[in-house]
Image (cartoon, rainbow over all chains, first blue to last red; front, top):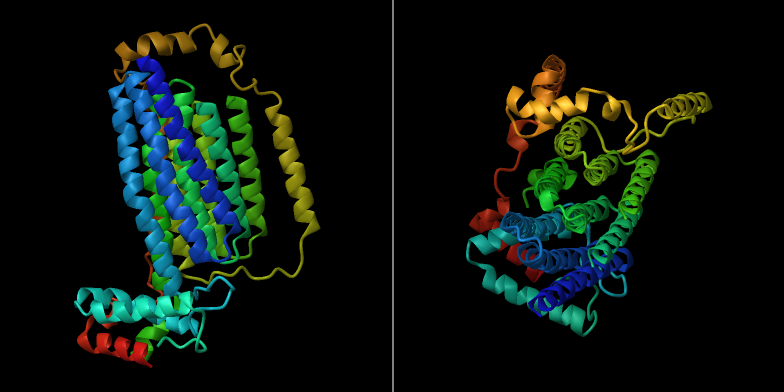
Length: 159
Length: 93
Length: 203
């Protein structure tokens, strides 16, 4: 009975992980531009690793009876949970910094020029650090809600 | 079960590899490669359990770290080699 | 199942290698080289050569990528378009590769029980039974590398060390960009920069 539960739970976790991982790969293939691909890849990377590792931990404790293996899987999960989002963030930041302009669903660029993207990437951490982010954030969310929600009213300026 | 997981991870690796080869920009390649590295870690871990010898996990651990190191190294290269960064400094807007 | 995994990984290797050849962007090629090493190391793991896999991952995917990046920072990303695709070079490479593959036909098959290393009357048995008491470490491969073929390992280490020093001295010669142009902090950090950013938003 107990064995059946262990197998069932680890089966389910690993299968969910597989679904995450494969759907992430399909997203990486099918999404239109870098930032959406990044979205697909990074989230499913972490989620897939989380579920598969959870299944493996259950397997290693109850089936293989090896606590060391479980600890190693926990370490792998730990490092993945730290490094994968960090790498994704650094990737997106560097892409913006080098002027790759994000586009909306119809393929229109959301920023005027690549210089503007660079400027955006440069300006953000400073605003966060000096505590002046609330105003910027309000403008930004207004911009994104206005631009993405109701379509583009004016031709591309940030206000 | 582990066989299914292994096959799923292999399919994923093939798909991300396709993106790494297709990717119009370098960042697409880098994204695909980073994802591919994570999948390699998963593959080795799952494969170790599939063959009943979870000793391979050490290697998976090392790969997880090396993969992150490689990605960050390339991104660091971008940041300092980037022409936009240099012009930014000169303009001093 | 093992055969399937190895076959898929080797297919990945071939595809990545072709991709590296076709790519004109050197940075992309360097990134793909890192993946190549990772996949090769994965194949080594599946084939039970764990120590080789460790080395391949650390050297191929870790150090080489960083060294290539260091070399790339002296030059540009783009490969120069070649004026001609040399047929003679292709023929030469194909012949060399064919001869090498012909040479591997004499090797024992993967995992074969009749290979000389397995059928030698003393070698494997001696290593397995005596290495623990003769050398010490519980890992037989370590004993072989460190003691039974210690001079060989010493020579290898010397070569690698010399190569490392040479690479470091080449890459460390001069920085391409003067030090003062390296950004120490984001210029937007100052109050002026922040207000400028807000102006940029208001515009």
